[in-house]
Image (cartoon, rainbow, N blue to C red):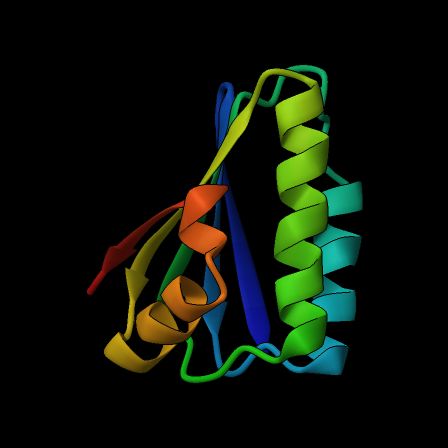
Amino acid sequence: MKITVIKKKERVCFDFSGGIDELGAELLNKQFRELEKTALRELILNFKKVDYIGSSGIGQLILFYQLMAASGGRIRIENASKDVYDMLLDLDIDKLISISRA
């Protein structure tokens, strides 16, 4: 998995390429920890090129939600494939994070 980080003032976008497995979740966590969170208000996760997300990746999404919500920020998942979108809805992740399909 590859992550490109795009920063725009109070907004950061993670552009993903590949599946988010255990190693991908570790990379995702590393990228998130490197962010300046005091100025961060919105984290956008572009899932356009994500074909798979495992339990480790789901765990990271929930952790990021908790950390962002505690500081008044929010997370959005954009461009999720039908399969990834349906799985996130089945897990009720949409109750925590705004999710849109590709």
